Length: 394
Image 1 (cartoon, rainbow, N blue to C red):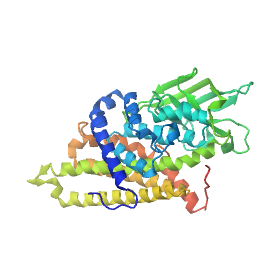
Image 2 (image 1 turned 180 degrees about the vertical axis):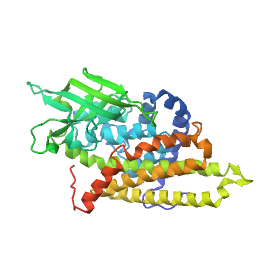
Image 3 (image 1 turned 60 degrees about the horizontal axis):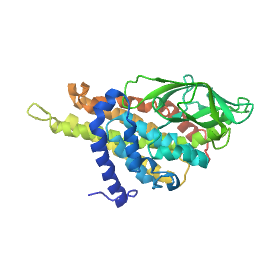
Image 4 (image 1 turned 180 degrees about the horizontal axis):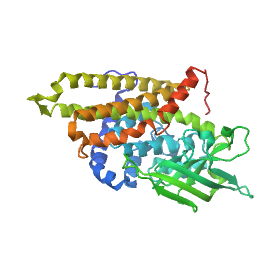
């Protein structure tokens, strides 16, 4: 029986059951194959498109579901329960980060050419912000997009790195500098949609510690021609679009971090009830029991803060502070939880046959990807100490 909730209704619980069944029957059995191949087949994106999972937050006009935000929370929580950080990342980047800008600020033409097939799972999307020499400082990006003399296209030059879905994806929402002479560095940035099979693009797959089932790339752009029609929203307003959407990106990361931590705890509880030492189940030893109590408490506290932040987000509040706190707290929490849980598996926790070993590899990047913990602390400090305020863009 589901406990009373401020956020979830009966229909959300029914939706959770359907997503969990999909994950358990069509995703989890492929874990070893996808992790070994270090890629996800396009067919699984198409299957999620058929089921409507990739269009939850988007308008029905373009094939979406237009469901409320709590359906997305359910989907993301169940997605993280697949136990593959790479798979969960690839799907969440595709749906909640790469096409979000197209849905909010793109033209009808862009929505029909890119958002619609992304919702259907026919095209896989990536978001390219980070550069080899530029991480969280978006205003310092160097990739340029210069208009042609005819004015009908941009010529893109530069490089991006750590791009999820960048190796095998079909298109990328690309952050570029369109006005090198802007009075402020953040004022000359734009967003372009770029087909990843365009002439002049070179993709190099990166070899990661974890997230093996997802592909991550460094992408070079050498005189890549992009039609002006592929500009998202207004030229030179890209920085502000990004700052708005980063709230959602960090909230998404927090939702999956909490669910991933809960999964690690569930694995551990099962193990504690199976493994024996000194003639009794190891779950009966006080030292372990009290650690588990701490872990369970940490997870529940994080979950409630994530839900509250999600509620503020649905009310249209600017939640830069809260989402930064969510990203910081949940990423650090998940790292601690998985480390603690692995300890209770003993030597088996260090064996690849046990999923906790994969979780240990996957979780480490949580405090780095999507904005490091250090950057989150600086954002929070600016708001709390310096009284920096943020306004809605869309």
